[in-house]
Length: 239
Image 1 (cartoon, rainbow, N blue to C red):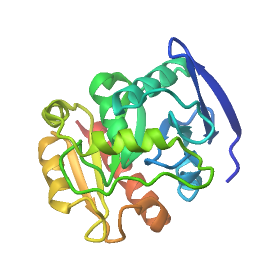
Image 2 (image 1 turned 180 degrees about the vertical axis):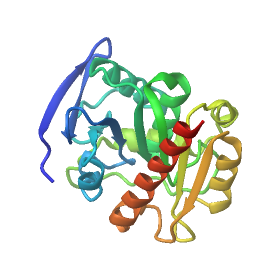
Image 3 (image 1 turned 120 degrees about the horizontal axis):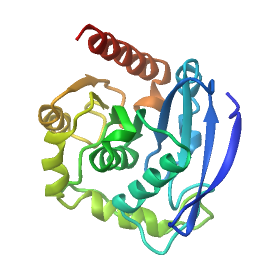
Image 4 (image 1 turned 30 degrees about the horizontal axis):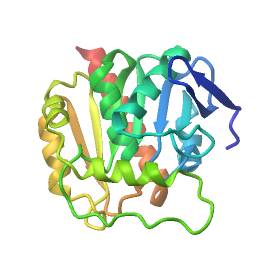
């Protein structure tokens, strides 16, 4: 699916700009997609057609990635603040916020700091920063669609325990779907189960396809997300 628009958005007060793609009907339920470390908005192309049937989908290139601006420093919180500013500037609120890997941690931070922006949260194969063995990135020998310093900084942060984020899981007010990649992923399934137990309104779905669920099984991923959204909508109506 071709994006209806690809737009460069200066972020007020941030000294930087984000580039994003937009899909779907203008009156559709807002949905925001946040890619993984080293990715771009294009990584969502396999699931966008399903999501954009009824949602107004915004897919961002995050700070230091793709066509968005690079910066002198990086952290999950800085990128989450970028996303918050972008959503405010675009007047997006009550959105379905979907994040994969690093984008999932950014999505968690957005939901923790600005729950008014998020009606439903979907995090794909990620847990808040915690110690684990991860090989550091080697410096690229060819041009890459991301800033190497961004990759290095966020990998260090992702493997350093963040007590505040783990505690805040228990205060998330919105329904949350956690998508697990299974035994072939570097994220242990038991860690995702810990996250699911901490979030008050969490559901957990397992795929045994590795870390990139939405890329390895795009139709199945989209179907699972949309079915979960529909079930949560029905539950809210019946209350």
